[in-house]
Amino acid sequence: MSATVTDSRTPKPLTNRDRDRLEAIAKGTYTPPPKAKFELENDALFGGLSGLKLPIAEFRVTPGLTLASTYAHVMAPFVMAFARPERPTAPHPGPWASLAGCGFDITAEVRLEAGCAPLGFDRLNTLWFVAALLRLRLAEPVQMSVLADRPLSVVSTAVEVSNLLPVELDRTRPLTAPAKQAGEDDLAWISQHIMAADRLMTQPVFNRAFQTLDRAVAIENPGAGIVIAWAAIETLLRPGPQRITERVSRGLAAYLHPPGPDRDRAFGEIVKSYEARGGIAHAGAQPEAKQFQTAFRLARAAMGTAIELGELPNIELLLERWRTRA
Image (cartoon, rainbow, N blue to C red; front, side, top):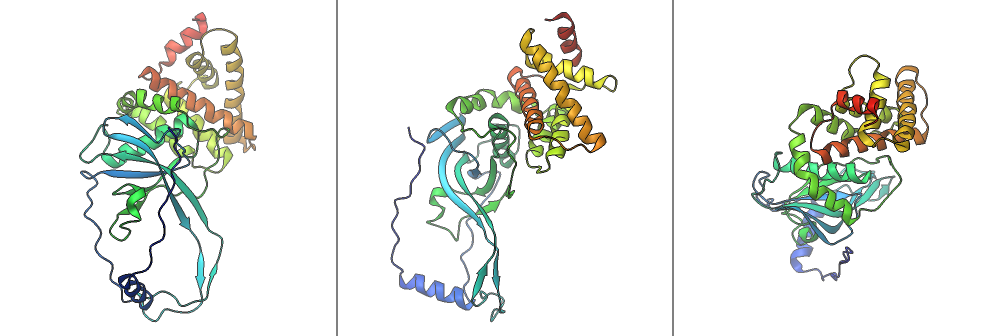
């Protein structure tokens, strides 16, 4: 099934009512109709996602919670006017000059049915958690840009009464991994593990680690990003105050790999990444792009493993596995 969403609507001719409305807007005398009644804790919610293209038109994550393809464009232009308006409610008279701005496409939405609360979060943060799991799984700069009270595909038929609320509107988010498209296996992973991840979020250690990593993806400074990605790993593993480099590196290698050459190679990479983190934090070293992506790859792998296992890692058991080659 194709995920392509097209708009086949044709422009409609202006009615007398449209002309009257536009004239009133120009004069500053227009009073828009009231917004539709909207209750976050009861009504259906629609979170517009940018940075994500679904491989299928619709996917049910869990009962009442769905991902669907859509299209909208968020525009944030900077425009200058050079004369005061005739009254405060009127637009500035022309000419206007366009400055630099930003914009991005919304290509998917996460939908939560009315009255549905499938996770332990409040209903708005249920949508956030789906977006956060997509960020974790895909390593893509996915963000829930807009919250709406109806599908974005029908907002244009009732623009003035629709409720549209800004949520995540970062202008730029750095790539923490090579770009990739979401596959059906990625959606299946989220559907399979979302309940286990939800249960883990009730544990303060995992909650702190998960949110630390999720917030780190919006940090544009590579050095700060590496330090925070490693902070998420340390929070998850809890290596203790002594011999931290040794304990965290061996523990993480044992957590992510079975015994053998792959684990040995991973250990060397982990040590280098942790040492790079130390150089940034304590000596102001300038990180390489590869170091930035490696730190995030390791943090995502650790977080994903905890979710798949449904429990927090035990550093002492991991170090014993390292010692015995188990």
